[in-house]
Amino acid sequence: MKTILITGATGQVGQEFQILADQFPDFNFIFAGKFELDITNPQYVADFFRKHRFDYCVNCAAYTAVDKAESEAEKAFALNVEGVRELAQSCLTRDIPLVHLSTDYVYHSQPGRPFRESDKTNPQSVYARTKLEGEQVALAIHPMTTVIRTSWVYSSFGHNFVKTMLRLARERDEIKVVSDQVGTPTYARDLARAILTMIQKVDSEEVPSVHLRGIYHYSNEGETNWYEFAKAIFEMRGLDVRLSPITTADFPTPALRPPYSVLDKSKIKTTFGIEIPDWKESLRSCLELI
Image 1 (cartoon, one colour):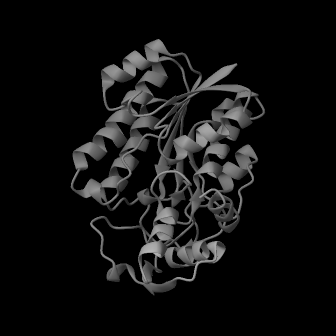
Image 2: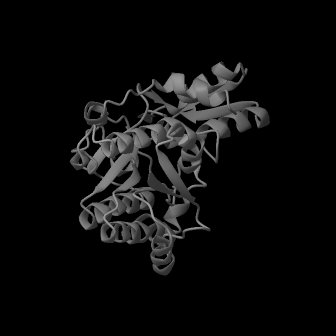
């Protein structure tokens, strides 16, 4: 039986992998949070890879505090670039495929259609630049690296937009939400399931292993903006909230947000036969758990 290492196991996506483990009985799992595996420490990574045997590595560890990264660039670089370098090198040495999570923030333009994996990148923040550099490092070091760019991730775990909106609904009489940033929410459980399905299909030789490399997009289907996303949250929960749309200019942040983040998922759907739920369907599923 093959074993999958999940790094960043205490984060949103990492915890969803733990929930889904029982649904993939053909695999064993090793779940490593930052205390079990600090990927920014080369010695810790080397020791961990010596002590444990596994056949696939999924890296969910990342510095994701987008605004804070502007003042903590070194920390973001250490985790999003140097940590990824250590993982990629260790995986290469042991011939272990690496799946690495990235972000829609590597794009920053409005192409008039969903972004394709081949589109030009244009990172506009420390977080975005370090995530892109992490991708590039992993792909350059290890030929069997899969980069999955995703967007607007939320879950019943951790800190995210959905849980923030529910908290604000209890605390405020009125909530103002940006309406001119367009994208697609991604339920972390759907993302984790898609990754496990990719690995399963390659491991069973249903899909050639050559496809477990390169860049793929994954988010839920459909598109919306943050204001409409918040509106859907409140409607599904039956909350009477005074919600007002504002522009990005009305709500300045230290880090620039992409104006458009809709991802074309044709490649992952065609290659791995993955069915992707609509974002509203997945939101409803998540809200039932919160």
